[in-house]
Length: 142
Image 1: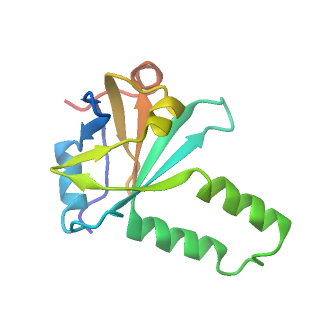
Image 2: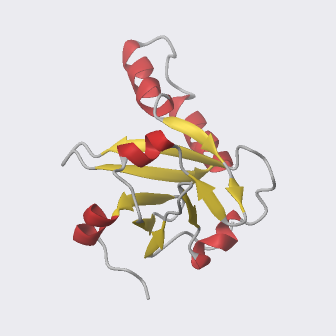
């Protein structure tokens, strides 16, 4: 994979809840093909401050990380089941078309997203934050 996803960018959601992947991130997603499961989108709530945001992973990377996390755990252990529930109940497949990602209405509502949003690189994946929350946390790369 190319150099990781770094930087923070303000982008616009269109009327259909799609946003353009920031130009520096496009290389990272090149070659994922036309599969309907190119990315995994996950709703997250920060345990420290209850802020809500979205994570977007290349699906292959997400699957690899989840397999690594759970391969040595007992799948019938109640704690493991809770961890699995927290991850999988809040994740869904997404796709990239014309360098845009479509967000579900559920993801939009979870992250309080509308109009302009923040897209923040986390090296192996990126996060999406509302404009208001992001303005308090990040500085845009110009």
